[in-house]
Length: 377
Image (cartoon, rainbow, N blue to C red; front, side, top):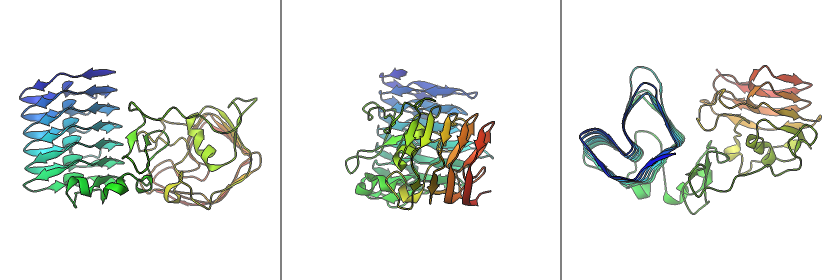
């Protein structure tokens, strides 16, 4: 973990920790607390990010810039920013955002902002947003939020995103009361009380990425200091071949994500007709789906053993048109799944959609059946 607490000033590419990142670099587990002042591309942590991956980073100092000023990053071209946050106030002229001032992704959709939030106040003249000031060309913003005051005097002023040119903003929100803004170029406006309710955040992972102190505060990231203690499987068993974990309810079914290498057996049939707090809006996140990226792919796989013991799992809805690798299990690799019956499943997604699993890489599947409705690309 690297951190900076000194105040920084300059003219171009000014960041609290790093000025410029290029050539597909990565910055992980870093933070900055100092004030940052610059002219062009000014960020609380990084001034200018070109094709870099920024993960689990934070900035808490105030940022004062002119062109492309952001609480975490001044300007980003392509690359990925995920599981990061900024809390400082940001001021500038154009391209001013709570976490990113300006995001530019030329020609192809290779830019992602995933599972991020900002709480600082933002002010500027044009292209001002609570989360991102300006997005030009194709970028995907997913499962993010902002709660700071947004103050702009010119064009493209948004509660979450100021200017948006052909980009996707999904599952993301801003506080319309705190921001003083009721419109945005993407995202959904919510009241302060709604921002503190887990039910508002459909399709968010409140199991290993986010947590929320219900009705008291907005969501926070699991890696942040002060997060809840590490969870463990709540059922019986040790997860070994001799003493597998015993799954008897939907909570324990979701808890398979805690250890994707362990052994599990189904202790009873599960009927999931009635939604629970773990299936927000009746939608279930596939086991071993890559929640941290928000994309779903082979970076997160189930490699253990699951034995249904002849029991069934019924009436489960798994649905998001933008989610790849859809099924009870998202991605399995050299795993064993046997003796389970799926009934009344409704699975919807993008690529790689199945009832039992979205993608099987060298795994063994024995004595399983599925009665499912599938919708995918």
